[in-house]
Image (cartoon, rainbow, N blue to C red; front, top):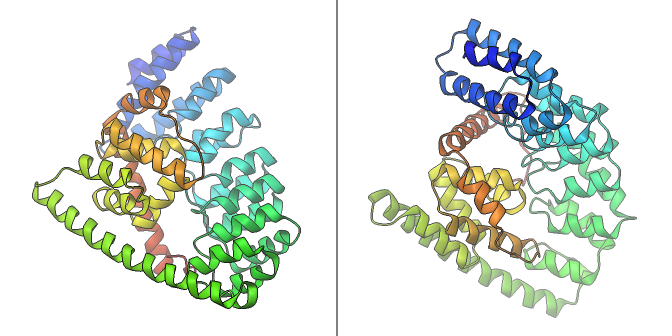
Length: 372
């Protein structure tokens, strides 16, 4: 590793420098679990100096590739995230695993609107971060974080969103689509929304009172009950399929592809979450609204074929109201993703999930009501 670091320092070609940087990072990450604290400190110190000397183009490439890997020196990640050049900062702000909640709060408190928009698009966001985004963010930022179903809101944060929604019809629609609305929020939202949006709330079982005619409420509740029955049947079927995969009688890849082709994204999340050892709801948020790169890493870590990922991306597009076209560039990026690196990234997510769960149940921790 020392030899490779010396080569980077002496190399003048930007392309060669980047190639060497990838190589030495792979060497470090492969041995990070067994490296001594001294070795880790020296690696971090040398890497900070090297990255600081890189050109803008190389910093952009480091930010979008190496810096989002778990185990990459945190100080460098923070420096890139704080860069005034949003093209350098954006990939890290959106995807870096090593940024803590406190890091994100600090960055959100002083970042530009473009920086805030990047943070708002992260796969998951805690209340303390969304509070800052709502306070400081302009319309684009507020829309992005509201449409992000992996973002959690405090009561005061939701109050401020409802206040902004009074003069913003698009924001009202985004709020209606959120899966974590409390009855109290729905009650305050109803006077602002159209009959069409009220029907969406009724279809999901919310009490919409006099917002739509009683006979329509009855019809929608019947549809809701039927949908619940189908949902229970689907959960049972996926449970049976998971048992068959564990016994070796079925393949995860085939099962994921089949379920995705039937348009059942939540069941895909249940299946992948089981074998990735991640919470179903978290995986669903990743598949539904998460960053594309994170979806690729998750599927790659489970050794899914391109056919399965393609089917998942197609149903994701449908759920988001988009038209889907199979993209050769995404396929190339997926098949070129190193499987060991992807599995390392998911292990990091797993550890972080456990830590967050423990923090949420510790004395003084807060768990948002109705967020499940």
